[in-house]
Amino acid sequence: MNIKTLQRRDVGRLVLAGALLMGATVAFIQPARAADEAPDALVKRLSTDVLETIKADTSIKSGDVNKIMLLVDSKIMPNVNFQRMTASAVGPAWRQATPEQQKKLQDEFKTLLVRTYAGALDQVSDQTVTVRPFRGSPDDKEVLVRTEVKGRGDPVQLDYRLEKTPGQGAGWKVYNLNVLGVWLVDTYRTQFAQEINKNGIDGLITALAARNKGNVKG
Image 1: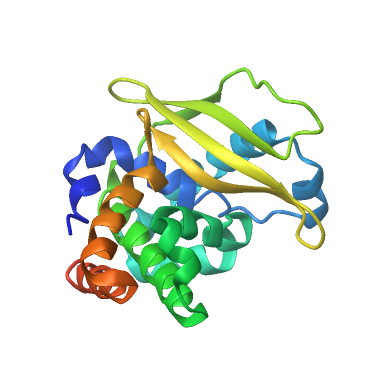
Image 2: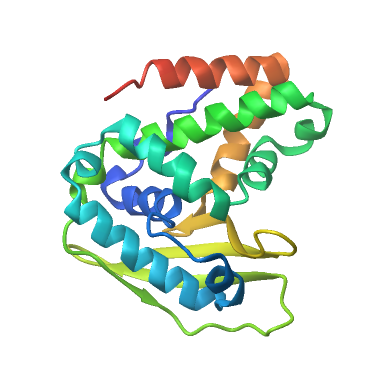
C-alpha cells in the first residue's frame, strides 16, 4: 500500500490544508454562533484564527504531535464530520466493517492526518486567507466554500466541502478538503482501496497503524 503518496507531494504547500482542516476550530466557538453562522463566514473566521494560533504557538509550529492531538480531540473533532470523512475514504467496504473496525479506522486515519502535517507546520509564517465569492442559498444542506491562501510563493487554492447538521451541535461541519485541485478524501480512497482489495479491512487497519508507528514524532 502506498500510503506515503500524499507526503511525496509538495508538503510545504499541502501543510496549510492539513493545518486549516485540523486546526479550523482551535478558537472556541459558541454553539449558537456556530449554528447561525454562514458557511463562508465560518470558514473565513476559523481559517484566520488557526493561522494566528499556529504562528503564535512555537510548540505547534515545531510539530509537537501530542499537543496537536489534544487540540484535535478537544476543539476540532466536534466541528468535522470525521465519520463521514473516514467512511468516504474507505469506500464501500465501510458498510461491511464492524463497529470496532470502524472505530479503529477513524482513530488511525486521524493519527495519519495529524502526523502527516505535524512536521511541516513550521512553514506557516505570513499567510492570509481570502474567501472567494460564495454561491449558496439558505436552504442548502451541503456547500462548497472556496478560499485562497496567500503568502510566500504562489497562492494556494484551498476549498472546503461542508454539510449542515441538525439537532444538538447544529451547524456546518467540514467533511472534505481540496488543495491545489486534489480532494484529500478522494486521494486516500484510491490508496485505501488497494489495501482493502488485497488484505481486507483488517489489512488496512494494520497498514495504517504501521505507517503511524513509523512516523512517530513528539
